[in-house]
Length: 484
Image 1 (cartoon, rainbow, N blue to C red):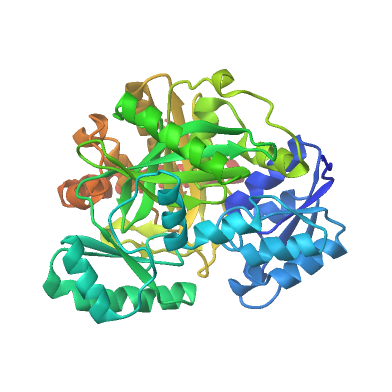
Image 2 (cartoon, rainbow, N blue to C red):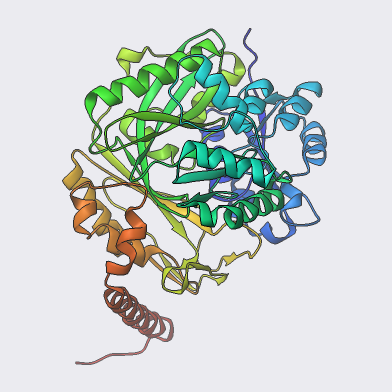
């Protein structure tokens, strides 16, 4: 049964909130923004049709779903879109929306709960024939028992938070001597970030690629894939660059991960969008690692190569619409690369950077997309994740995409804060990146080899350009006559 949505509350902030507001405008749906006290100047707040403050702790404000639902009712919204992060994978929030008669734009609460439990989801996927890594089938908190299990599996092993993600509560243990210390560290971090200290233990795969499949499914059993993304370039298990499609994935492996992903989601009755994530080892074996029941940060690269607006399709599925296309009608074209732009200093152990943006020059031109909510004069809050935007480039072939990335990154100029743009400039000039030699330890191996002096040189050039620009601006402002 279809139910037309007329107004959506965007339960998020930053660039993803702006992305959803824009999707609403194109669908002629009214949007409602919320903002914490440090987000008063957020551009998504200005762009939405309506906006409401949510006072209190800047992080907890976006997690207080009872207050957010109350605002949605007050604003006469008939739906909520959670974006990613915050409440996007909170099954209780999804259930509470349903209770109040508000459409939750995302999967059913039971699927959010299932895949939010890393152990339960691993068991469920294993039962329907999806290959998984050898490891524990139940969460564990006892250090001695965990040590015995690790020894049985064989080192190296990886310890993972059972009820979280994003690289938190995760440790790689190469030998038995390090296990106790790493186990305690992982469980404490898991408790800190997710409120639960349970972990599970798996066999650690050396030099894998991290490949994920974008799934889209409606309420009528139609399950399709929108291709794969290569997310191998990571730092401390956090994605840094994402690519669609994967440049060097064996075609038979590609078809297999498509097959097992769509089959699994069909068997489980999944609906909305989601991402099935795999590790691919050096022998091209695939292993399921997790399922993300939300729109991904990296969804733009899939949109660009497929031509499908994922946010808009999420909304239409939530309305009860059938998918408007068949699998064979989806055609992938070219290569897209996404660079996560973070306010951090790669030369100082990636220390977060905050402050006011004093000068801002955005890249553009053919094949360049920029998803961000920053602007000149915007102050970066100290309360949130360091990601401030995403630069996405596209070209018909890999070589063209790399060249496009070089040009766009060289055009990108931000003053007032430190960003990781110089690191991205180094990566796209690296021989292994150009040759598509990408694994999850790529950045760990290459960081020491990057020419940091070149990074500094680029920064110096930017300062010169900025100085010249300011001089020209003063000349214009004061109408100073300049003679040769």
